[in-house]
Image 1 (cartoon, rainbow, N blue to C red):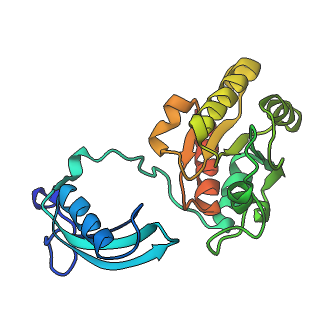
Image 2 (cartoon, rainbow, N blue to C red; image 1 turned 180 degrees about the vertical axis):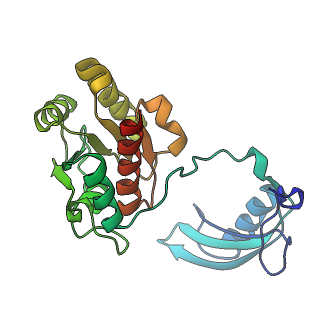
Length: 248
């Protein structure tokens, strides 16, 4: 990273002008008072000058506002902590070819929404053949055997099915986050697999819009995928883990 790119500031109209846009709702009836309150809040958050560029009523007692203005804060890119993708993105053809060469059989994937979570949109987007964001789901891949257990699957049920199917990978999706349910459910799941299978457990993958990819170690899983993840990213990761295992 070049030295002049270590520190960056938001870009709006000209490079480095610090212009940002944010939106929020205030419990104030729509009108000048609500817009003035929004501008004051933006000023306290370090936006100066701040302009309310849009506002509208949400019912009788609330106002949605969009504020545009400049901030002086800098971002130190060397202090940014993220999970970098350490494997290439593969096409379905490449995934199938790599798995056929490395395994000589279909890779078995079991997926589910665990606990009381009934939101299957995420797991279906990754597993179902219709896929997501223009990409086919894992069911489309010839060298993958996919078992989608659906919603509200208990951890013991998931472990039992994974053992029965001799799963190579288990994918769990969690959307419900009240009282950190997504964290507790995933930790329970990973602990159950360690207890039941030890080092022979399948690759464990957790996904959901409120997961931070940096949480994998705390959750006891091998990978965490956040919002916007596509089936191709997951398939490419599974190939990566297979090749690591073969090399080991």
